Length: 595
Image 1 (cartoon, one colour):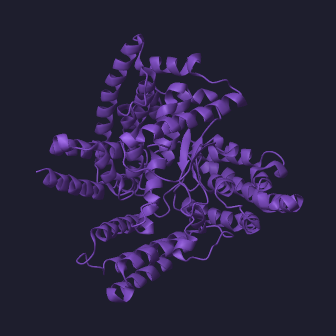
Image 2 (spheres, helix red, strand yellow):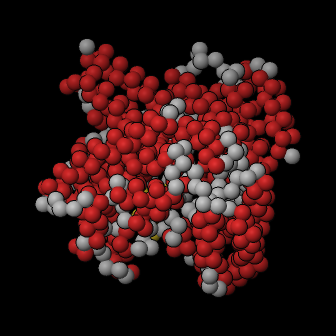
């Protein structure tokens, strides 16, 4: 079935290549056509983005996105067809913005097609995410419940879990046939997560209680909660049990090999993922060596900060652990303490927003909320993450904070985390991108790892320049966060290319990354299931920093940091080579004006 679909897609692509571009309308219309077709096949993303009205797509809030092997093949078919169409548009006569958009879309489509040999290589369920975690989080945090229609489609989507999980099992069985199996600890972690999902009575489950808070149902509260509870009892829970049954049967066939080198054509797969996440062609050994160099540099900076506070005894790792364990930096381990953490994060964001005008001449208009990670997702979720606002204004951006363990939030780490996830990091960059109305919609919604995470990591360092890390302890919090990103380059390549064991990687993160054993385990297990993704942070940051150094060197006293930040942010997320060209064009134009 999959092979036939791929052949059909190739035929469509050939037909499209023979169609004169003048029959396709303007290139702006084509950009929207590509995004429209993608979202028509991805109703969950359509709901998340809030673009139905803007793109003229009928709402499909009652449907879930297909995840079958055939759906993956159809996605490749569309990419082939769209790329063939895109190549019909000549650069001559296009505006600068449209030429950039064409180049970005070409990169995206070609990147999608490079995935063809590895279409089923990813671990579609794992201890950190996957349909078994992401779908409930989507229902609780994204699905709109503003009116009775939203409540109706909510219940319809609960019933849609049956077909979604059927397709998920089809995908998992195909991977089993192809010898694409996750490490044993991953399957064990997923089973533990399913046990937590099934704990308690359905009427108290978040998938039911979320509907209880919807204003439109208050007059008929019992009826709506009954419908949701019935769907959870008769559809959702049985599907989770069916998935768990399959995973328990799969468990004896898994092993303790952790790197993707073990998969069919695993070495090529890892190189593909490095290119996908960084948008650069980087040799694995260069990435590994870069990580080691950055770790050494950051260690030296941390030593200087420890001298400032008079803590010079013991290894760096021991001294960092002493800070993490210091009661002076801890909040009370109760609900009042957790509420205090949320209030302090809001205060940090507000403080950053007050000084932004000195460093930026543009700011996003979209609202930002600080909220707790949903409890059912806390165990496997990272310490924090960001969810971008809906483009129709129906949902704000949200900085989610994980409060599962109070010890994970020492005060001296909070500033850097807030700058990364909120302002001037993810919320600032993504909010601005959504508001650049002269860009086609697909560019306003992009989330390219090296750019997005590189920018957020760049702003962690920028915050020190902005005076937002007032104490040496805050600086140590920043350096610890940067050290983690540098160590990832070493560990990720170590696991997936150099065949490090999980234990070897954990020991490195404890000794060199200055992490507590439990944190080191969580980090390493993340890298195992998301190969190469963690490499994009530091590489993206260094790329942006290098562009700034070039601008400062070329422009001298004429360098304006506000204008530089505008040059980096004005186009939304870009592959790093495209970003470099755009910033170099800006430097050239500023230099000509100066001279």
